[in-house]
Image (tube, rainbow, N blue to C red; front, side, top):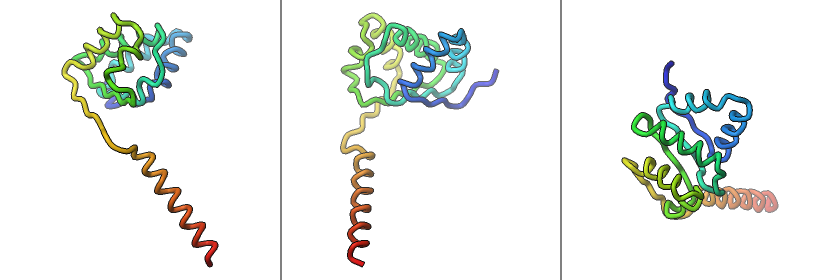
Length: 135
């Protein structure tokens, strides 16, 4: 079976999809699909602690991808708190060992682009309203 070039999803949605697949008896098929993806992007990882099933699923995903596929994780949570998010020291060590080994870490600093964009949009809307009143 041919590998997909890329798969992207927000972490909460990914874990929801994994839970649904488990309930429907298609978890193995979904895990195989994720394993065959060349680049798996997990966006917005860590906004809430993982459940026991989510920890096991994440370990399996990371383990399956180790040295066979690329994994890109985006998070607002500092790496120093990832063990806390995972919630189990042993599984946390296993997951993070695989994630950080050979990892390239890019830490962005500065104001949020979304906030800056939102402020710009609000300013433009305010200007439009002001100009509309003047005319």
